[in-house]
Length: 149
Image 1 (cartoon, rainbow, N blue to C red):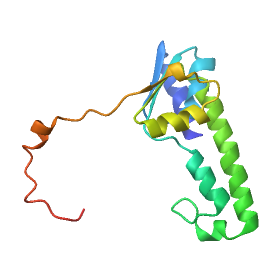
Image 2 (image 1 turned 30 degrees about the horizontal axis):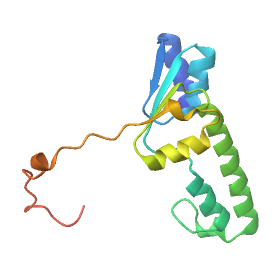
Image 3 (image 1 turned 90 degrees about the horizontal axis):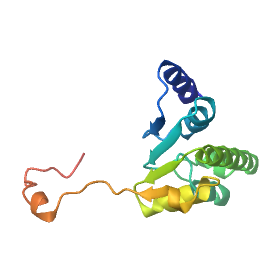
């Protein structure tokens, strides 16, 4: 909700011809497109919700986004699954308003293709992050590196 409010405020101050989102706030796309007449271009590094997340909740897999108190309780699990499905539908509707979608991998490409309603495969482009060549990378010194973060 806060992203939508921020988008409205920003678009009232300056309305561009092309609204570019690199933050993953898909719920701003209909605002920019319908209310302000912008073309929408987005770069999605990781979808806000994915089919993997829906499957984990449905299967009761305990993970970072699906604690035991939800996965082991039939009613909580069902409620959470309905919430996730509703969120995925709303996310997909928002994706419909993107004119050009850029993603960073085939994994993200496949998820966005399955989630965003009405998005043509020709509108989704994989843009791999820049990487140096082996010659450039071999010049980095890793001997002082410690095995922990």
